[in-house]
Length: 161
Image (tube, rainbow, N blue to C red; front, side):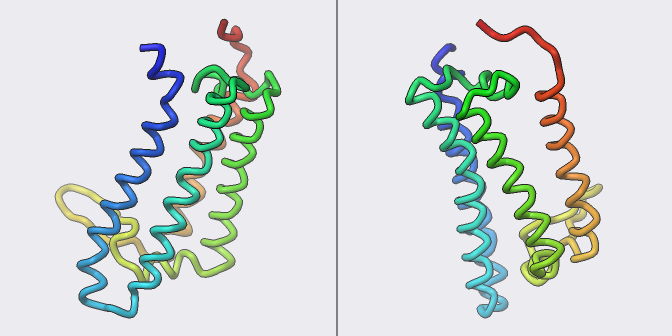
């Protein structure tokens, strides 16, 4: 059980890769209908894989070098461990990049033009998101991460042994 906590980062990388490749397979249907969208789907696939794996690679480097002991170290950034701070800083940077891309670089419109990237599900029906919905939903998605980050920085809990 201990190895699971020490090497959890590998599972997160595998899950990210599987999700990325499943999306790539699903996107083939849309590309067959509109071949001009193939580059966009390829770009979003690579962005997802790269940005999705970077935080877990940082966790892996920390654990493999002994700078951190397990995934639980990353819940205690107030200890000021450099790898934990790098991990948290990377998450904030990814959030800022997503805000910049969606609101200032046409990312919401890109998502709308590339169906299947993000979908809204409800009671048996599935609907692609519009640019307006993406712009409304992004702050809610980020809010969950921000709340978790604030709790980790402010919550006064005992340090794990």
